Each structure stands twice: as structure tokens, then as C-alpha cells.
Length: 513
Image 1 (cartoon, one colour):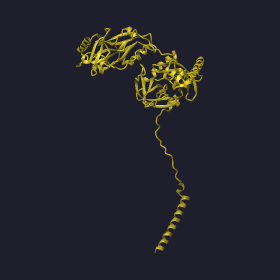
Image 2 (cartoon, one colour):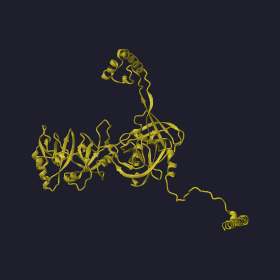
Image 3 (cartoon, helix red, strand yellow):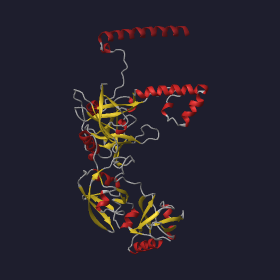
Image 4 (cartoon, one colour):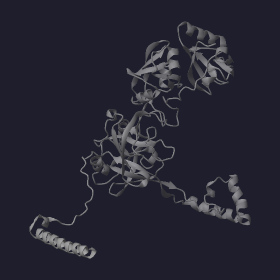
């Protein structure tokens, strides 16, 4: 049985195989299976909707953006006989220089000194200063005839300038003018070609959250593009009295300085100038000079090589809530005059310490920085109408605007540091005072470190000149001035304090003790 059964199964399997082959052969020859071919794998492809990008903007503006290379003249530091190059740059009576000559070479010291004197004499007669690279930044053309904008801090120490175009072409440039206060500079490339250039946009139309594209030369890599949004407007980073930066989160790094930040229309809305970074690299906080500020400065630099600004000569500080209450102001606006500069335009016009400048030519002043900008925008020689708040009422004063002094002269309406408060009087405030030697004010001789005056920053040696704009010479007069203010419903008194010839105001609450 097993053998028969096995033989039957074997024959049935052969017959089935022959039948299958015949069927398949017939189908392959005549039926639809003739279309079957071996399967092939295909690459993955996703037909996603096209997303908007920045390529069109970048393609148009990139030829206008350049790399700026700066070189400076440096003295050659030759071996001077001490064995330490550059030692001859020290004065002859410098003890370090004497040390190296006398002990650095032992018995050869005198020979080294004589050799150094001979070489120094030869170099002084004909000393070839060498030009070496010292800085690298970015810039952009604003005219087809070769004017370009960059930062002052990129070019300020330079003696030779080279711009590298988008295609790698290197061209020499000359410095037209620079402005330290806004950190702007203008260079000019003289060449027969017509340069691709870009226009300044209106940054007043820029809204927080809008896209910006930064193009520049970070780390010397050449044309690099980053994108982000406007994070904030009107930032004050302590760079100067005219701070009004746009804050953007596009990656801006070393070498991007002077490069443009574009809107999506290809207009320059800001000039990348500074970053906030604990590490030195981009952390998404960059600051750009607004286009309207830059355009005004650049136009003046091209025309005259310098920038002219108005000046009235006042030392000012912010109006805090306490100061506003002490003066009867309805809002914390304006700029408090701590001290008018002697013989300055404001002092000559009658502006006094304790005045709060609330408007310029009818345009309201929000804070000291705003006042500085408004005054700077007025041409020297013109008059400005200042609205000041004095003794509980508004008053108009006409001031003749003068040119801003040079850097080595006394400064203009530059905002002072925010209240680091000062005076007050007697036990309620933890103060001990006595009349000053010259009869002008009272001197703080002792202070309770737990008192309100100390909390405001008043220290021994400070001189309280006035209370609520009334001169005081004794502690009793201070008490009287405080009592008078309390009777009128004031919640604070305004003290004028002098420290090391610097005057400032501090507001102290009244109902104490």
C-alpha cells in the first residue's frame, strides 16, 4: 500500500506540473499575462504645495551687498636689542625698558642698548609703516555711481578700504564721512561700471512680526543670507543718545556689521549694527539702525562729510511716577531738566533746573531720548518752541538752536541714567543735614541705611539744593517745603541733589513716620 500510494502521488504531481506549464505557456503566448514585467523600486516623491520663500528677494538684492575690508597703518615692531620685539616703543625712562636692557641680556645689555639706539635712529629717519588688515564687515550700495553705507565701528580705525562684490571682484574705496553717534559711515568706489544698488524703505511702516532678510559677510564667509522677524521697535541699548534700534531675530554675527536688513520688497529697513550675546555668536537678538535715521545721516555725510545736529545744552533725566506726582503732572512723560549747561542755549533762554520739557514745537516729548532726537533734527540757527512744566503750569520758551559741540566739548541733551535717587531731610527720611559752607543747600552728614532716602541712593556728602524747586539752606526749610506739598495733596516731594558737581532730581513719598 505504501508503494502504490507513493507512485500514484508522484504521477499526479508530474501531470499537474505539465498542465500548469502548458497553460502558462499558452497564456504567455496569447493572453494578457504577456504584459507582466519584473517590478522596479521608485524614489519617494511628495507633491507638496509650493511654499513662499525669500529667493526672489535675495536674487535681486545680493549684488548690492558687499564685504568691507579695512586696513590700518601699523608700526613694524623690530627686535630692539632687548630680545623682546616692540620694547623700543616704550619711553626711555620706563622701568620695564631699563629692566630688560640691564638684566635681560646680562653682559650684552649695553651692546644691545647701543644697537637699539642705532636702529631706532635709522627707523625714525625713514620708518615704513605697513598696512595690515584690522577689520572686516559688510555694506551695501545706495547709488549706481558707487556710494555705499556701512558702520562707523567697521571703518573708524582704517587707512585703506577694499570692497568685495558679490561676484568676488575687489575694488578700492575711499572714506567720504562717518558719524560716531549713530555708528554710520559712507564709502565711495570710483569705477566706470554702474553698480546694483538698493533704496531705503520707511521703517515707520514696519510692524513687529514682519519678515526681514539680513544679507552680509559673517565671519568672512562672503555673501550669507539669514531671515527672521522684527522682534521689537525703539530699543535703547545704551549706545548713544539717539538709540532707536529695530530688534530682529535673524542670525547676525561678527562681520554682519554694516549689512542691510531688507523687507520683502527689497528695501533696506535697517542696518545691522549690534547683537546681544553671552557667547559672542548669534542668539537671535540683533539690533539694526532704522532706515529713516540712516537716510538722514547718510545724506548729510555725502553732501558735507559731517553731520550737523541741533543742541540746547541741558542735562536731563526721565520723569518717573513719583516725580510726576511731586510736580503735579498727569502722566509720566517728558524730560526733567536736572541742570542747564552754563551759557548754553537753554540756560540763556530761561530754562531752569526742575523744568519738565513736555513738547518741542508742539510735538509731545515722551522721554529724554525722544527730546534728544527732536532737538537733533532741528537745524542750527533756527528757533524751537519748548513747552515746559514749571510750578504747576505749562509755559512756552523759545530757544535758539546751536550746533552740537564736538566730542571733546560738553555733551548735549544726552539722557542720564535712570533715577539713582537722592535727597530728603530729617528723621522721617533717615537723614541728618547741616547748612553747606557756601550757603547753597544743605549737606547730608549722616544717613540711616534702612531709611527711604538711602533706598533711593542718597549718601553722605550729597547736597540738597532745593525741594519742589524752592532753594533750601536749612533742614527746617526742607521740613516746611514738605509740609507745604502735603497740604496741597501732593504724594511726593521733588528734591534736587548735587553729587560731585552733577545735579539730579529724586522724588520721595511724603506721608512717612
